[in-house]
Image (cartoon, rainbow, N blue to C red; front, side):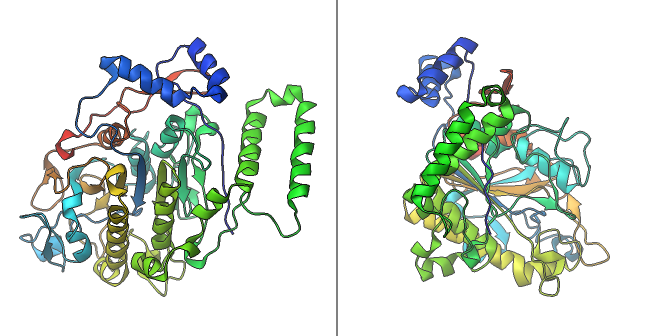
Length: 470
């Protein structure tokens, strides 16, 4: 079964209250808010970025390896370090001269001419929830190192997906979609920083819980139940309109307005063949589906490509665990506290390498990579030393992030770590800088503002654009 959570979206960037109201009133007449903001930016050189790559990315795909991608076995191997640091795996040459990555990434190694790597990302936070919050929002969690932290004040800053939804109009489908499930700690405790937070539920990305590998797509609002005819649906919509007309007082409340937006979106998608088609993986060849891989995460990445083709601005794919612990250690996830090397070799790295390379190649072959930014996301890395269970533990002091397409400079490697890949030596970047760079590539300077429900301006980023990878 698949479920969708949706709310509408509006945006302001330095607009006066009068301008905001004016745009709201004439939006149906053809002047969209995004066009108004774009025109204002072009008319004002102070708000127009001259840094390379500005506005190159039309869409973002967040390739979310939640649980912690180990830097030693991926983008920052240390072949000269002792085995207790480097691990049991060697390195492999890449398409970029002089650039070595972990030997378990042979397919990705042939695509580094399209990939930029940040080797010195730092959160200084070793907890999934709070370090993850910082990576998703660009804001440090208060306090740091808080595991199983829940959403809510004071850690209520909007996620990247929510900000993009505030900045970009929905085009049939919502402008930001998260699949195939939310990110959670043991006990199904969701990380903070996955929704719109204090800028309002109207900007929440759609969370679509799905199993595309099993073709389990029953999208509410996009398919008719067997017992429903189109006439009955139209009658229900008419009844809903009548009820709303008699509830003037309730209709003024934010909660009801949000519900109405959700209802109208569901009805509009019900009749949208294009929206339904975006979720129909049966339209893909068996060869393409096999190319991505058979798992839930792999097929979600193929779905992400289809959603980008359907003009969704951001798709975030979250790595999913394997419930059967007898099949894989560590629930099949990247939180490899035990049997780290075995988990990487038997499952994690081959699956990641296949799916990531398939996604990048597929986008490139379809002419989409130049305008689609792919981010290999993780909340932190892993400890330089192995623990007593042959595992590596959490490490937010330095780790790697990779980006492809969408205006980044292929073959760029920014940042240097020490001999143990434990701390940065140069080129350290914070999550706020990463997000500032992402917004820049999407065409939004870091000082761009969105507004909360009471019209207070919120700057989308406090970071600096990482020019070395553009």
